[in-house]
Length: 270
Image 1 (tube, rainbow, N blue to C red):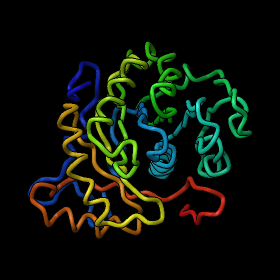
Image 2 (image 1 turned 120 degrees about the vertical axis):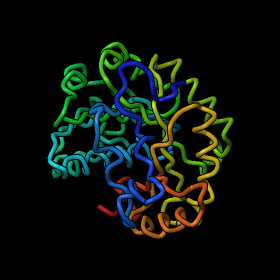
Image 3 (image 1 turned 180 degrees about the vertical axis):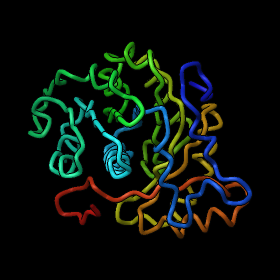
Image 4 (image 1 turned 90 degrees about the horizontal axis):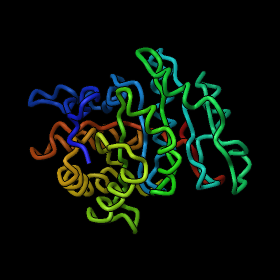
């Protein structure tokens, strides 16, 4: 585990928490700046089903809209469903370069990683953001470990995504165990925590709010800064207002996201 000040890391996202005057909140619509600063290499890790791919696609789109080049690397060779590669049309429509598993969009069980990932990692620099969407659990982190030496040689952020509405990940203890296992398997340290608690289309601002205490406790026990929490765009303003009413939660950034990943019968928010 990392306290966010390890050598070679860029400024902690936790330093972006809003102050008493409300700075850092990005207005009532939410904080769009959470992922807009150095370091330019972002690794998204967490349990299967917490929403890593949907988050990665939102980050990639938002960074591309800000005018920087973006490369999205799909490192999920464990789960044949809900991969970034499955959304190639969305990615390419936004001018994002995609590197993903061979046969990744075919739901085959034995995809392999394409060439060019090492070069993509090395290309991460000011004006060129690179996002690694890692498969869930330690099994998914093994693919990340293949590139650990290249990653560790440069500034990076590794965001541990938590969703306390997942039954198997509803406790702080289970999330801590997974965090440690992911670090041991990948050979890389997490640098911050991002709360992404949701219940898909049944998500409410109050439901997200009820998870913030556990998210804060997890970050504290992991000795990592809390980057912020996500909320569906339709709920970002109301959630920010609710957070502002509690002095213990005031200033936690809210990152508004759209629902890009879903089952074929779900309405999406692209």
